[in-house]
Image (cartoon, rainbow, N blue to C red):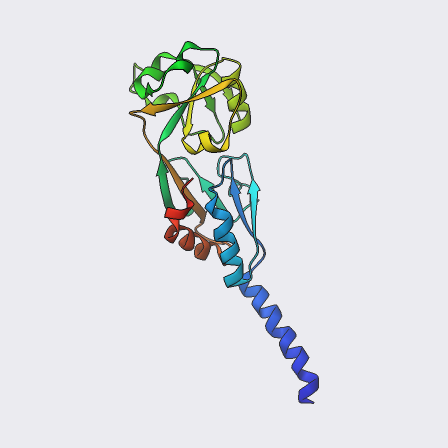
Length: 219
């Protein structure tokens, strides 16, 4: 009798473990996940048995707002209500300038100078908007787009300039865009967020581990 029950008990234990761990942990991003996330995900899976999947979502909250993801890497402030988050790091900004413009020959630009230039705005996942400059000294909008790739192309064709975290210089290149160091600009925060209620059972644990490993996650 005991030998017959043992396999059932092992199966029951396995099912309970699956319920405790929950489904695959999906982490959303708009663009450019930190390279260290892959190492963190591997360690997390080894420790918990929960597989981690990275999902690109061109939505304002990296899929958290549509239910596509359980955690989201967000680079905007203020964060929406109903989320819990940890601040992983803050990045300096860099300016993206059309290669055909004379400004592309500069070794550095100042944040205040950009107020006199048309600004390319990524309305969905961007980090730079005219209201970040003082009233009465704000750039006009040269063009709008809805993701990072469109943003880069609009800069390339000369519709205006833009700014992005410096990690963009290491992850993205375009033959018609020059990335120029930028001084006096506000930093770009990177948060890892999950819903305050009804979150994946392992979301908070991953966020805590990411926060503790923030130094190795910076791009």
